[in-house]
Length: 272
Image (cartoon, rainbow, N blue to C red; front, side):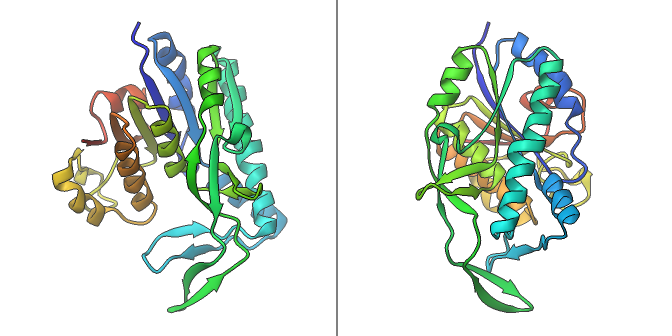
């Protein structure tokens, strides 16, 4: 059987149903693929923050990127949602389907090491201000030994988007770029990023405006088309290819057999 390595990122936002992927994973493994599943946790973290009565606003960078304001109390909420609720729910669901899944985060085994963003420039009411109590980070390196050991042992790793700071702190990191970093570290054949849209749309939210292919020659057009969170997905695809991943695909989590469909050409395929 072909021993290809696939890193899958399952979005954690509203409207992303994990069931099609969970149903498909046993077949992917039976066909010889080695799979690492990474995931987001934004919807779960929002729900827990609302229950705790915490402020869950977003930070808008001068370049237009949105990120969660991860102040100390929100960090605890995010850890509980990402490494606890979402991660263990996915692991339990896979175990129920006969997949020997193991849950971990980027903190474990120094899988993801990041530098904390100690001074973030954010735009509020048209003016820039500096945020100094945020516990989000920019990934600097990956140590995939723990994943190699799990994969070689027949396990399916399920990775939450947390990283270890250079000073030992836990940091919230972007899930798409974490998946890209892991894919590059594993020299994966493919990175598949699943969300609640069919891929990169030229005219969001018109799903008939799907951009099916992105090459180096059309990359600038893809960047211009990306809006909101899709900007990070495009950046993650770029970083994966730059790190040696065979291809990166932005695809639809809502369809039957979403990964097989993506590998067969559905979605937006980024290639070198």
